[in-house]
Length: 118
Length: 107
Image (cartoon, rainbow over all chains, first blue to last red; front, side, top):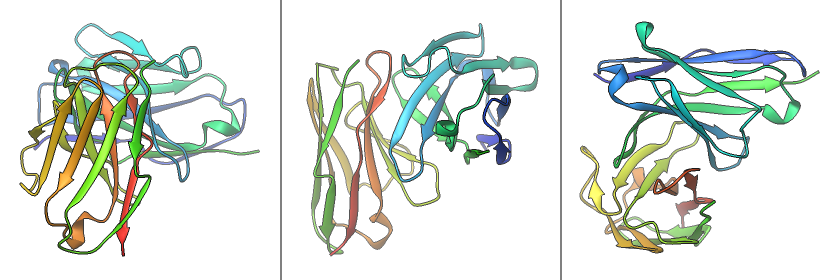
């Protein structure tokens, strides 16, 4: 069974750093890209960027470029989303999703809620 | 960036109704379009990919059509489990973009 399991909820202060994770199982991790999607409270879905775990090649949305870093460790089938300096406006639910080019995002993680508050 | 719009933003319907949601892209995206269903507190679920291909396990009452800049998602006979928010997404070019969503609620 294909699963993407994300790390647990986080509460952070502005200016702090954070890395959240997304572990894939039940499939060959390097054969599919992983995307990250933000959903702010009560709002819609925003694509942040993606990584190809086979070579760590990334693409970012201009809205997120420079503010987040997407990485992956194929040896443990895990993708990451990290911030070096959080802002209150980063408060949101973050989802990882598996992407096969041409097929859309077919499996999603359960989401990681990030709360940034002083 | 390619902008995606959806109409309507909210749709009130009854069980058994035929429901149609429209998605428009600001430029042509061929058929590189997906539809997702999201329920409160849950991750989105892929319904349709490549504009009209039904994802495995998705009921056949869901269908998609369109190409270029205009697309539709149709639910032929709305079921109680279908009350949710629906998003379209283009994956023709980066950055991939989602529509703002259409909430389908109970009339």
